[in-house]
Length: 278
Image (cartoon, rainbow, N blue to C red; front, side):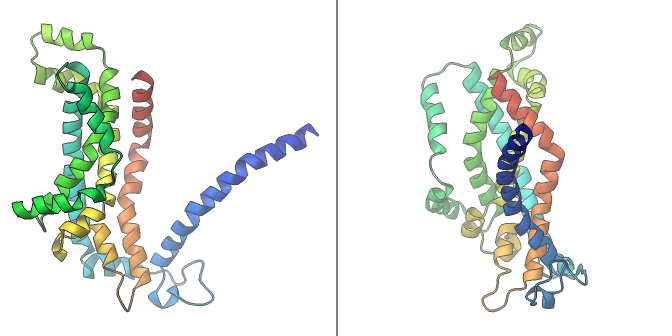
């Protein structure tokens, strides 16, 4: 009787996980299958649950003839620059909040928290007017500036826990040895913040890579498109090549999957360390 109860309890716990896994896995599997199908077989009835024959022509079509290689490079450039800027600004801002006392400190921190309550779509009109006056419309720098501004507040809050976990005595000892403030941050603080740096750099990179609202509003020239916008324009008014669209989607998610594959343990370690020591 006891074994039956254990099996039933285990089944009750596992069943929601199985449904959740299927909910995520089935759409992803269908995209993979569609990407390797011939276009004529995509809407075929009965549906093919495995591509037969397997073809790579969809990837060649997307990469070479649809301008996807340019979209990929644009997205990579924007995401890398945003991640670097967010890391620098987050470390400096978090360090100032953690180590210094200044008028308006609590109000500044409160404003960082308040910014998380508003969607980025609220910034579209003022940012568009600002970028238009600066001549940055159809420039990748409009995406870099907007994505950096959106990502900095959350990552400053996240980085603050890592800075607070560093004993101030280490910095005092370095100052006694002759290091100035910049040298202390660069040689002492930054190496101890590597788990947090990896975490916020990954988050910022991912958010910029997946951004859609800002690119669709600020970029009109096709040679400046990023992946998210490029995928949207692959959906035609009268005809949509689903196999090519699926291939483009796989190319788009290849970088995030690879990124998390390499840095997952560092992200989890960084977040848990910051949370436990804050």
